Amino acid sequence: MSTKDCGHHDEGRQILRRILAAVVAFIFLILLIIFLIWIILRPTKPRFMLQDATVFAFNLSTQQHTPPLLTPTPNTLTLTLQVTLSSHNPNARIGVYYHALHVHASYRSQQISLPTALPNTYQGHKDYAIWSPFLYGAAVPVSPYTLNSLQQDQDAGVVLVNVKVNGKVKWKVGTWISGKYHIDVSCPAYFRFAGDHGGGNVGVVAPAVKLQLLQSCSVDV
Image 1 (cartoon, rainbow, N blue to C red):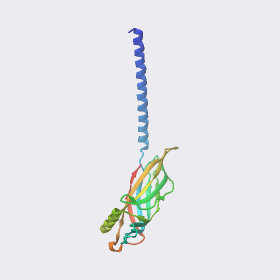
Image 2: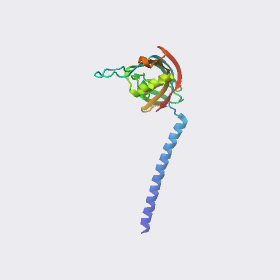
Image 3: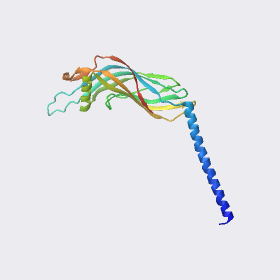
Image 4: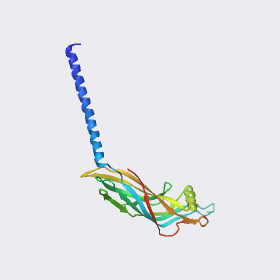
């Protein structure tokens, strides 16, 4: 191999090293910028709380004995609730936009009310937002498993209902606004329960019972 060929190989290796060094430096710079942004902004997801719930109706109708030739009557649940939800933006430099939020009630992973839409809301730095939606479920069919669980909860004197919120959020830093991210919120609510199995109906202690809950919610973004 000639001296001229060796010189070309050495020059090629130097160019390759420079390219690799530039790529590594660029990646390091990007990671450093991301780290500095995180240190400065310290982004934190919103914090939700279920403040209270007013129970206007929560009645379970069990099927009665049906003649063999007739279609059995399903077990149904009818409920009317009003809940008060609050959200706190803990970020000092990040605003939050809420879009297409819907709230519904769920019992043991079964949705038991229609979804109720919440208004689009902007939440500034360290700001709070409060919603008080009504949740309705008219003669919602329930499975035999759900029926048994509700009757067991009745015997225990309390029923756990999850108030769930889902929708989209966007982050605002200065004039920059991010894309939309999905948000899921779950708030446990314990309701007092009373009734009589023999009568075929189960209900709350009294109509329009207001419960002060102040229950923290789990939030996934």
